[in-house]
Image (cartoon, rainbow, N blue to C red; front, top):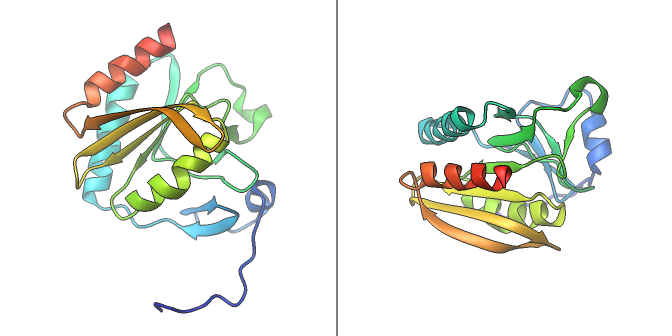
Length: 178
């Protein structure tokens, strides 16, 4: 399939994407294109589980979860590996979460690390999502991105995975409390 040209690429808006009945569960909208998500192996699962456990232990008054689409921009509707939201939202009335409601999105990249950094991170910033963590378990890289302006984040902190997870969670909780 390498080098194969796509004859028909259909771009969708987030509204169009979310209105499609019968989509497979593991797809996201990236730059208007419906993309399959890679299968999750044990390293991905372990990293995601570690982040969920650490955040849930420190944020009992917030909604911390894995999965669930976020309306970020008109052409970007991802399913982050972990997301944090305020608890006081009427989920039945509101529909899908929006970027301005998310307090944190976490992407764990094994096979998707490059795409997470080059495509998803700028799209999260363009949508105004206040904080994004990119975790690359295979390289031990862990970056925290804050302060979205246009299509980039103004504050990036380079950490070590998994050594700095607890400190990153402590700092995140302190920012929420501040």
